[in-house]
Image (tube, rainbow, N blue to C red; front, side, top):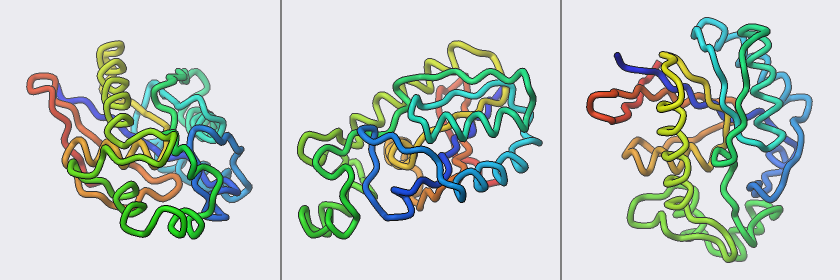
Length: 198
């Protein structure tokens, strides 16, 4: 039987609002709009029959996961997995997108934001590449699928992780706004993931 993995991006933080590069080295909380976004997402998620949530350890993801789980059911567990954390973007972390483009160049930044398998080994100085992020994120998804037989699984993480998965799984590179959803369906016979457009 095919299994559904719903990957949710966390709600907005003030760093998102300020267009700052926000990796795992920064751990801000959701702002008021981010809390509202998570509550709106929770209303949509309520019908998905999720029985477990896995979350990045970063506060913005855990806050989002808690809001989703509370809406789905009081006994829904949230399991924190370190490998779901956002990428480490090295010297770019905390800088605005304008500052990052000025320092590293438009083409380089675009190749990090929208990687292909030809460019996904690029990384900011002292940072992590999307290839590295994909390897740990895919390993984490495989671990989750091995640990539970649930047909519907919720995962709360980050835009960088979603972008890395889209690249590594050969999916279309589309924006990942706050509280967006990437729906993957896993086939246990072929061990392949397919993107489902709901």
